[in-house]
Length: 116
Length: 107
Image (cartoon, rainbow over all chains, first blue to last red):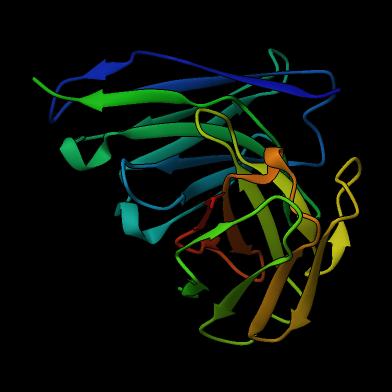
């Protein structure tokens, strides 16, 4: 069984960077797309982007190049960095695995609040 | 971006009811449509992929249909554990996009 677990600070100050890590267990990271998705309070799910292998990334243009996703397959982790955060970036952040164009495994999610 | 819409935004139903949720894409997404269930405080769970294929372990009372721009999720014989929010998602292109969700609660 595949398990994903997000980790990182729950509070980030405005204009700083948000950094989250997702640790994968139960399967290899190869041949899958490793995704970040978020859900702001009262809003729907928003796809942030994904990484394939270690260097092929695709991002949501709505984030205006603030997002960087990277992976370390030897440590079975992938990460999200979101720069210049504002209150609008307050959300529950999920990591998930995309296989064959479907998100089949998700982490439990972590709430990140942007506030001074 | 492909915009996804859902209707209704919420509904109330009894255990045992049949529930139908519709999802519309702003352009043709062929059958690249997935449905997820989200219970409060939990991560979304994949129910249906490729518009009509049931994910392993998902009860057969869930079914999906549709092609192109119009899709439906049907829950027959609604069970207490089905009270949740349901999202459609297109995987035809990036950025992946989700519908606004349909909340199903107990009447």
